Image 1 (cartoon, rainbow, N blue to C red):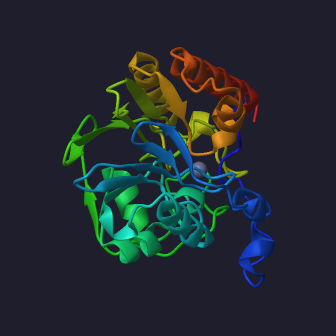
Image 2 (cartoon, rainbow, N blue to C red; image 1 turned 45 degrees about the vertical axis):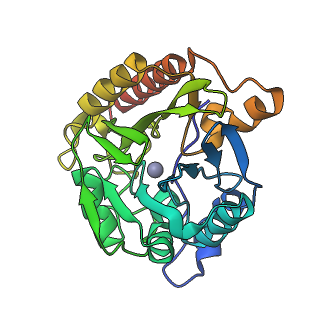
Length: 283
Ligand SMILES: [Zn+2]
């Protein structure tokens, strides 16, 4: 089941944020921090993921939710006994307001370095999606991130013993990035985590994936990214919207480890793109 990421309803430019984004209150409902495995912790809200990967040399934070999610994420980090100031690196799945909105505040509070793909970096610095966003004009702006470094597809970032690898899995946005790392517990048991970016082919009403002039590579990017996700070693899948990979059900049932989860996620995404392409015929 894939959620419709960032397809918020914008009513007018004079209403409050809560009124503008019909899903934001539900997405931003608090959720207690959860240890997923070893040194990998869920510190996001009920509907928007943020993960903390910890080490004695500093931590990595993945995604920042909405602007109003940042205080909840910081409270979750502190509730676990970690210091926000020990977050040394912040990375992002994709630069829509519901995953990047809290990054500026989280960077300011932690002093962490923010690093993203090249296409995402431009959107993060601007605090808005670019014209090449399939959803251009339907998403909300967000606080711009002051300093953003970039990395290449396949590059690994390191903080002490932590090593997270970036995989460009675009299509939902041109800069969409999935992240993989190995999470180990004190007994030395390790699992390969994949934070797989949103794969939903949602768009503004006037955008056609099959005939786009603003993002002509969208379909090729989806296909390439889905093949990448299928090829990753993937013991535990987490997605920017926890509902897109049934995270809470898996936590409740103690079945987080599922070595086929990434392959199923990619297959479902490929089918959703095929349905979208078919729906565009004759338009
Ligand atoms: Zn999105």
